[in-house]
Length: 228
Image (cartoon, rainbow, N blue to C red; front, side, top):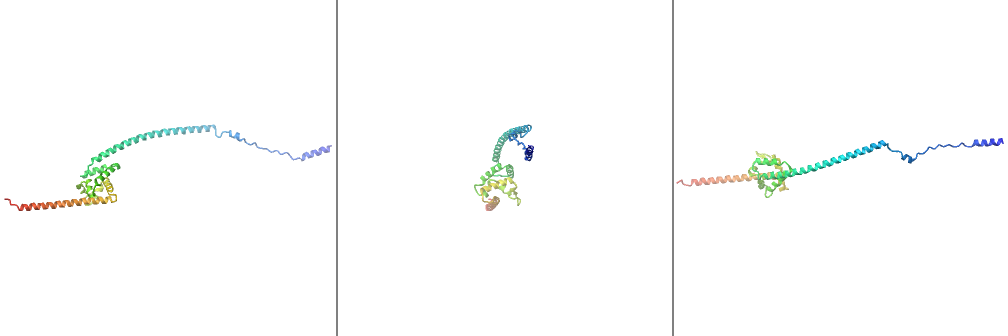
């Protein structure tokens, strides 16, 4: 019997040892989700920042509205001023009488041409004066013949330069271009002024010849008449 117990004891000793495996406890995702992602204090700071941004946006919108109203007022005033300037320009345009007769009148007109609006008025005005016939004739509707004789375009040969009155010359050139779009305006003006001078010279020459003939006739008749 003692031998049997000894055998059982030996069998128990031969059995493999129990395996003790330690499993780490897995984290519960639901429990993990319950944990806050940010702290309470950080959340309060973000909310405060968002409120400040909202207040700044509100202030900016109010400033934009104020500026918009001011711009509307300025636009209305600018429209009034522009309308008043147009009336003034029109009145000044009516004050200038054509043809210009003196250098002073030419200088005055040149001084008026200070804006595009004024220049456009005189371009149309001068165009209406030269459009009806050849430029060599119609230019005398803009400048009186005696005034034209004082000028050429470049101021050569002892003459005054028409180009030195830059604003007036620009307006005259633009009106000439409107009259003859296919021609060179400067060349046309040069030729017209020269023709005016030639015509005046021929007219004065004929007048002098006529005066000489009349004097000869008078002298001849005087010699042939008896004082008694």
